[in-house]
Image 1 (cartoon, rainbow, N blue to C red):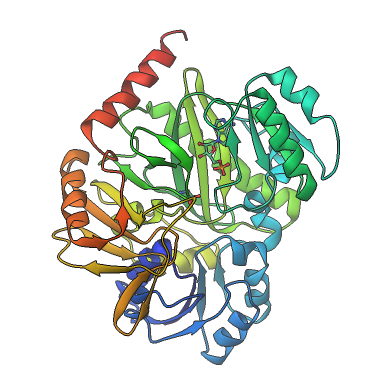
Image 2 (cartoon, rainbow, N blue to C red):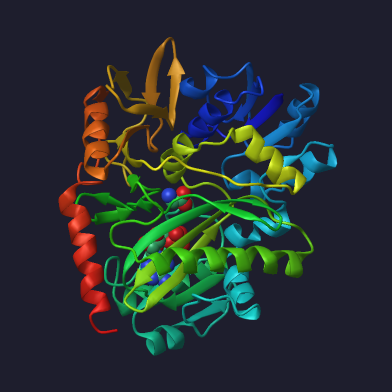
Length: 432
Ligand code: AMP
Ligand code: GLY
């Protein structure tokens, strides 16, 4: 089977590995913006191109692609799936109208309200250049300020961590100069992610994962694309209740149904729900129209089905049962020193023995047989085992094999950090 993958980061390396494992004798073609050595090694041919460029479609047609898989959000927002479908190529990744659920946070909050989808925080949308946000910020008192459009995970600012009431107002004004704005109440709890394969109506869910957005240990520092993530050997995480997971599944299922009603387009691809577990249930932080990065690296290696069978199910609307191995995983990113605000770029990294950990190449490039950082998250290691603790040790062994001007969050997946999350939730649930 001739398959096109769009994207060249760590998430896409995990997708490429899942494609390469297929029994359908895949021939993999990749469109990526820079040469990811891990992906280049797995594919028959690649094109270095901006992932939103319609040249991606010409590359697919020329290579007689039978199935396309889109990794990142930018090509979804640019409507690359629509162009591929129009060229007769089935795509895992929603069409532009359906992908709005990720690339327009204002649209999504209004959509949730219109269809009565549960887990909606108090919010208000302000159109570019509009006034009135100060009054609403005062009314809520404790807010999160979000540009409506895509910001690579770095545009959202949360009160308390990043600023006070006056800072929130100033940032809201700054956002309104360039974009629509969403102001919403700050949710307090523990975050988790649920990812699902979606064929337009049926959803098949992966186990819950927790990412770590903050740059430094102890959840300190600026927000990043995600420093690492873990899952347990069951569907839920240690701090979650079963109902948190079943409620998340219900919300995602309703969202898929409502998207079809609202846009007339079936949602075919991956749906990512990010939730806040709180004392009295869960709320929706956001939806993404793709796998998470790093969360794809947790769940794809656990997939029991042939990934290309699942993809076929998605594009033909015949998704069947999907199963995941009952194992825990811990993923840790090695990122350039100074990331995210002032990262070292074009700095060489040496990749040695990563032990039992899987290695994923992310934002690095290869030149003259050497690997260099780009300034974004560089390499990820994944430990897999029966328990989170064991998987964490494997991930740490993996990090020992990486040398260069890099740092990681060594606290991800440790007993101490997980206990902190469990105690936090116990505290929040006490009053309910
Ligand atoms: P997003 O880009 O929407 O995923 O937001 C980035 C991060 O901001 C999330 O991972 C959360 O940590 C935080 N965040 C977003 N919305 C809220 C909210 N309503 N309450 C608390 N934290 C939030
Ligand atoms: N890890 C967060 C994201 O992929 O959006």
